[in-house]
Length: 425
Image 1 (spheres, rainbow, N blue to C red):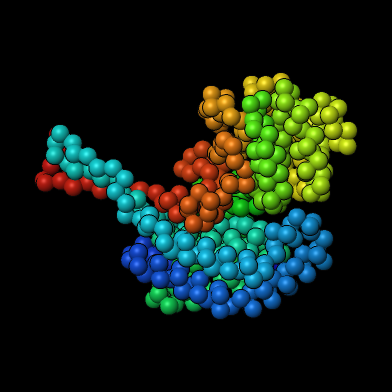
Image 2 (cartoon, helix red, strand yellow):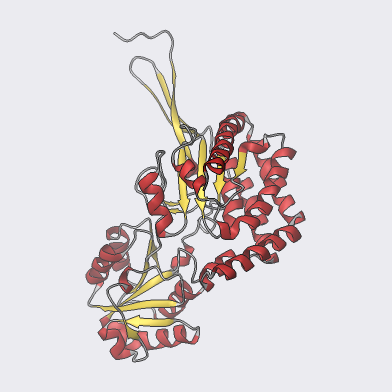
């Protein structure tokens, strides 16, 4: 980038930051009903703008193909009428959520008579940096409005046209509710220099940065950010079939966990199975997976039972494929399965399939990932499925928020102290 363009983009981003601070204040003081109206009107506008959104998405798909993106990345990008309608319905679900701001989280009275309350408040200005999912534009904007936070959204080049078309619906919604359109802003360029400016904090205007994308994006944000970061790391998820697993559940859950949508962060990437049941359960599971087009990569014990598997390498246990590829390992027992997860997992989502309640509780207690599941698909790692309406991502951090990041996770708190003339001795 030449100096002139750098100055121009710096001015643009500085102006966006100043407007975001004003937008945050407007949202903080707005009534819950006003913010609800903004989201519902945006949902109506998304439906009205379906043709424009789909046309913009076609441009993005062509750009992605020309750029040589993988099929999995393009699948994440694609919108169709059903997905546009799901986006609008998702906004309506967010609008119906209880307002997260102003909740009294705790209250107590001190011996000196001071009345102290802990009350939920917005974080302020949140910058969300994301890649190829157009629906993130809608989810992030709605969640920030619901939680009274101003948003600065920055999507990747491959989704920019779709994001701009979706963002226009939020301008409509905010106008209809009488709120400044700058409560939510979308960076109108794919220039990476804008990301660097956001990571610099824009003169301390940004209160939180949320990256949602690949490992390299998250690593860059964590390394360079001068504002707090809420990270969404890769979903290197495991499904473990215990010796006491129900065969039908084992097959159906594994198939769904891997193949429902291979490109989502909740997809299972490694299957672990107890050797006590591997000979009986692994061949039919492998057959079902291969029939759906899944490539299997196994250890020696797994390959002895399913010769069509290729050999798994050390890298396979550490890979989030986001493709129809699954690594498979036969383990001695639950202890070995848990040890494998602790060694290779990313702290996202892990599942156990078993009818043994004691074994399940051991797994749920000892596996310290953001989400642990008993007898269900890892693809339930989703804010909508948790009843959050939507999510900005699955946080693998351990501070502030963990797991699906919905409206409650986008608030902080303050202390409200009420006295009657007390002075401290």
